[in-house]
Image 1 (cartoon, rainbow, N blue to C red):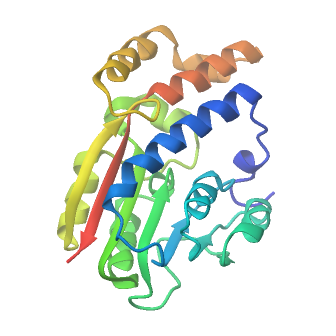
Image 2: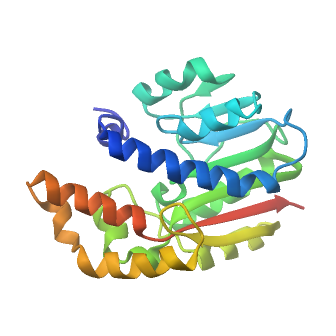
Length: 235
C-alpha cells in the first residue's frame, strides 16, 4: 500500500461519477473569471487525484498544466493528459521560485499535518508563484462538517475553515480576490438549507455500516456538507 491508496482504489458508481462531474464543473466555472486572461499561464495542481479538474482545464485550452501527485496509480493515470507529473508530498513545494501563475488545491489542504505545515505551504506557494499569481484552495469547512471532518478520512489533519484559511492568506501577503461557501458544488442559499437537513437526517454512524445503502447515504451526506473556495493573488 502507498499514500492515499484508500482513495485511488475506490470505484465510484455511475451516479457518483455524475455527481462528481456536476460539482467539479460548477467549481471550475466559478474560478474561471479570476484567472489571468491568457490561456498560456502555467498551472500547478497539487493532488489532482483522478484528474477530473485537470481535464476540464486542458479541454478549455489551458494546456500548460503540471501536477504533483504522490499516489503512484493516480499519477500514472494522469500523465498522458498533462505536461509534467511529479511525485512528492507538500508542504514543501519542490519547484523553482516564481515558476507558476496558478497553484490549485482541491480537497488537499485539509490533508496537511496541522497548522504549522499549512503555514509552511502558504509561504511556499508565495515563493513559487509569479507576480500577480493566484493561489486557489477548495477545502471542507470544519464548522459545517463537525465530527465528519475527522470521521470521513483519517488523513484529515489540518482543521480547515474559511476564517482560518483567510487569515493564513492575509498573513503571507495574498490579497483575497474571492471567498465563499459551496454546498453540493453550488454557492446558493437553497443548497445551504438542504445541507442543514441532510446533516440532521443522515447520522455519521452510517459511514461505519456494513450495509452498502447506508455507506452510500453517508457519501451523499458528505457531498452536501459545506466546502469553501478561496482565491488569493500574490501582491
